[in-house]
Structure formats: structure tokens, C-alpha cells
Image (cartoon, rainbow, N blue to C red; front, side):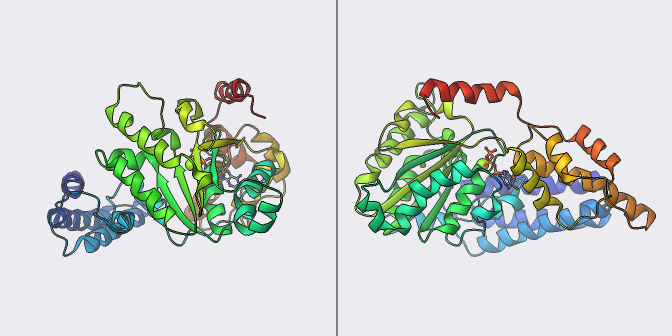
Amino acid sequence: MTSFLFDTYKQHHDEGIAAHKAGDYPKARLHYLMAAKYLCALAKEAGAEFKQERLKKAQRLMEIARELEGRQVQRHKGAKGGDAWDSVRHVPKVPTEDDEEEAQGERWIVSDPPKTSFEDVAGLEDVKRAINLRVIYPLRHPEATSRFRKRAGGGVLLYGPPGTGKTMIARAVACELDAAFFSVKCSDIMSKWVGTAERNIKELFASARGRPRSVIFMDETEAIVSRRGGGSTVMDRVIPEFLAQVDGLEKRENMLLLLGATNRPWDMDEAALRPGRFDELIYVPLPDKPARLKILELNLQGVPRAADVILDELAERVDGYSGADIQGFTAVVTDYPYQRQIETGQEQMVTRQDVAQALGRAKPSVNDKMLARYEQYRRDRGLS
Ligand SMILES: Nc1ncnc2c1ncn2[C@@H]1O[C@H](COP(=O)(O)OP(=O)(O)OP(=O)(O)O)[C@@H](O)[C@H]1O
Ligand SMILES: [Mg+2]
């Protein structure tokens, strides 16, 4: 029974996505509704741990179906004239596997960015300082900026191992600044808008330029500015457009900042790193010990722990873990007492043994070889 339900759900889900991508919104809507219906049935059969997840997903599908209500069949064309990028925003998003997370704000445009501040970002003091000098101050203190003949605007690229807080910093910048914040995931531009990627880039920059102060955040920048000559025709058309748009960022009347993030800087086109483009590269490293301690504290705040579970000691043990790895570790370590408490009906806490077990399961995702590659990259480019 379950497998019939699941297969039917999956079929509607996939057909819905296919229709959605093809611009056949009415058909997509029907399939999403059917998929949601089967998911609800699946939720009824599921154990406690999957029930919520399935219901949530069904709800999300219904929301998307609602957004599609009344829409006519349409091919994605981008819009003519006006603030076309805004119309892109209004094309409802195709659901994906990790949709809940994505829906949290990793969408095309952020008009009210999620609340994250520099305070929430543990450590990375050098990175914050560089961002302040290059990104925040020029927008906040234009007078001082011109008095000291500081450059304002331009492109800053955050690079470093995965899970070290690059996206988080960009979000924090959005919160700290009084500027329009455009957030684009480059892989989205490339995958969802094949054929219209150049136009989207153009429209994005046009929109940003239309406002007095804007920040464009491009996550996974390497997806759009990968080295040319890889045989990809989409890339060959998109990169020149991107470069044309980025060129001379600083000379514009209004303030336009381009903030990029990548964990594969070596895949980027050299041309994108020339002066006037992404000309400042900031390395976002793995957390040092105080930062690891802070991330542990942030994630285990209020969680009952045995007296011999000492965070300072633990911060030492997770040397080599990224911020995301540490977060993953805290999720694993709390699973044990959580499960025990539910099974025994008695209050539990995180014990030393839980910690040892979790450390065995939640391993660091960044290895020495990867770190050496960043090191080499920095050396080759003469970066500090
Ligand atoms: N310095 C940090 N302080 C607090 N939390 C952090 C830090 N670094 C990472 N994290 C945690 O890890 C999660 C993932 O971080 P984030 O998405 O910013 O990484 P990233 O550098 O953009 O990774 P990727 O290169 O894979 O995109 C954050 O949501 C946060 O919970
Ligand atoms: Mg990221």
C-alpha cells in the first residue's frame, strides 16, 4: 500500500514539476494538488518522525498550487520593458527536494532579508573587518569615504571551504545595510533559465542600477563564471554578458556592490577577477577555537548536558570541522538523549558517551587536501 501511495505521489510530483518548468501552470497545479493529497495519505501511514515532514511538504505543494491558480499556459520569456526582474520573481518557484530550506530566502530577490547579523557569525573577525571597510562603510558613511578617497562599490568575492559561513555573511550584510538586496543563486540562473540566462543577468543588473543603492549577492559564483572553453555554449554566452554587466561597477553614479561567494574559486574565469569586477577576494577560513566554541554554544544553548560535557574541551575536539559540520554534530549528539527520553519517559541529558558516539558519526567535511588547495590558490595569487 505504502509503495503504491508513494509511487503515485512521486509520479504526480514529477509530472507537476515537468509541467511547471514547461510553463503549463494549470497542469502543474493539478499534479501538485494530487501529489499533496497522496502525501497526506502517506503521512497517515508514517511513523512520528516522517509524519510532520510529509505534512509540511504537502502543505508546501498546496501553497505552490495556490500560487499557480488562475495562471495561463506560458513559456518563460522574461518580460518586456519595465522592471522585468520583478516579473521573474513572480514566477512561482518549482518545488525541489530541499524546498523548505530554499524557501527560507534563498530565492531570487530578497526584499526583506532574513534576520542575521554579524553578531550571529562566530569568529571571522578579519572577514568582518574587510567587509566593513569595503562594503558597509561606503554605504553608511559616504562623506568619510570620499574624504579618504576610498573606493565605493565594486565586487567582492568571498571564497573558502564549504560550510564556513559565506552565505551567512552575505545575509548579515543585507541586514546591516540600508540598500536593496538582490540575491541570486548562480546555479539557479544556469539551470532553470537555460536560454534566458543572459537576459536574466541583464535584467538583474538593470533593476539594481535603477535604485540608488543596491547589493547583488551571487551565491555559487563559479557556476556562472566558470572558466571559458569548457565546451559549454550556455557558458560561452552567459559569461560575456556577466562581464559586460559587471564592468565598471565603480564608475556608476549610484552605488552598486557585487558580493559573490564560492568554494571553487579556481573554477572562476580569470576575466571575472580583474580590477573593476570581483577585484577583492576575501578568504573565509575554517573556524578557530573561539569561533568553534561560540558555534557550539549557539547550537547547544539551553540543552541539558551532564557536568562532564565541557564545551571548551569539545571545541578542541572539533578542530577541522566547519561551522556547518559543528552544527551537524550538535544535531547528532542531541539525538541520543532525545530518543532515550522518548523511549524511557524519563528526563535525559547529553552525556560524554553521546559526545563520543556523535564524534564518530559526524565527521569533518573538509580535509587537508582541500585546505591545501585553498592555500595554493592564495599563494599563486599573492593573497594574504
Ligand atoms: N562562523 C559561523 N558562525 C556561526 N554559524 C556558522 C558559521 N559558519 C557556518 N555556520 C553554520 O553553518 C551553516 C552553513 O553556513 P553557510 O551556508 O553560510 O556556509 P557557506 O560558507 O556558504 O557554505 P557553501 O560554500 O557550502 O555554500 C550556517 O547556516 C550556520 O548555521
Ligand atoms: Mg553558501
